[in-house]
Image 1: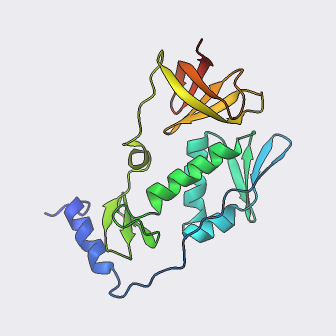
Image 2: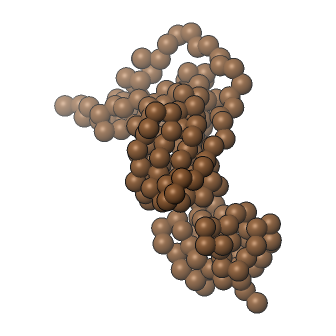
Length: 205
């Protein structure tokens, strides 16, 4: 008996469903996130504009962001309201990661793709070149990312500041908080603690 979730069977079924004629889209430019802060909440004012541009289910994008940002929130009209103050750069980073994983074709780089659910497997189908691949969420985004290690020193650039005034740097998919660092500085940072994709360090002397 053939397993309905067998990888080869899934690929065959998706290929049969591909349209014969594929049309190209206009130049793909996703709006940058428009973030404001209201009290203790963070508001993505153009959430639905972004969702419409990448042509994905709003709830799919919403759930991804809630998981990646480690917070709660809700969609209110065209806006996404997040509990707590989340930095603009972190939100933009996570949206960029979503697009790389769930929108852009890994073969030809086209955004003209469709996300399908075949049983328990999510599959990204490219309408431009016909490429098909299963989507593995974080694995697809992070498998080529350098690993950050506690106790080691890294050369980093401070690109943002937290609400407490700590410097924020990026290393692959990691967000690193560095007390005493100023935005725009390039510093050597010793990593003291890592929790999932968030790390804490200090300026190395």
